[in-house]
Picture 1 (cartoon, rainbow, N blue to C red):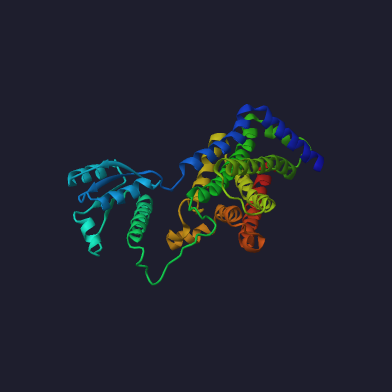
Picture 2 (cartoon, rainbow, N blue to C red; picture 1 turned 135 degrees about the vertical axis):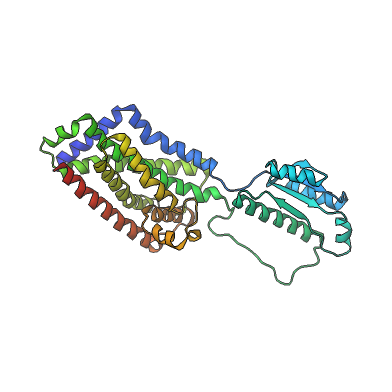
Length: 366
């Protein structure tokens, strides 16, 4: 039996390596997707364009402007003098915020009053608006403390961020990109490879040989499991080398959990191959699986912010558990003692999906 499986694996690898398009699909898209997502999916705000409206024109107001100029988060794009300019810039999206210094600003500060600095933020993107609000509030508060160093509040709040001290959104998103890349590559390659055999008529030729359906299935899945692991290593190395993502956990644990996850993706690809007659049908069916899995995984949208019914539905999504595992290994360095519930869920889903798909595959061949 193992000799026949070995021959199928060898045949599959030779066929894949002999076809340039298949080689490109295996290894080029994962790296390209990592680069695109890693650079594009970034919620951090740097060099945000703002407009400056100073109605006080005093040394103190210019000092506050210098504080904004010195911050890497802001770039003062324009100086404006009237309300029409404020409306024009925000309506057209030419700036992301307008800082307005009221008349009498310096005088009120010297008299011990608390003048308000108005920040008008373009709020089309709620996440960007929230971050800008936090940045500007923090900067103005720091400037205010420097003006009255002797007046300390009775209670001092000290904030410390764990696991992502610089609050870089890239550290949060890139591990999730890794998961989605592995899912897409292994699921689609498995489905397309088996359906291709049907299209070119070689599936019937294989079935008249002494190879059993179970051996054929194992021989078909093993090469793409290996491709998934190679892509995992490739994308992980690229994430560390290009984006400097911290990796605090165990590489062996990551590989082990990836094997559990591959049971699900390979099983789903196998199932898609049983319901598809052409490669086009297999590709479209793959998207029906990957898109809901992507949106319900917590990759981009926090699960706790979803409606309760959708939160319960996300527990049926294996991608959710693997993203939690990968982020935990990368950012927190967590081990089996913490990740065992997610690993157990992956094992259960993987065994169920692969088992059902195997039975259906064997039945179709028989």
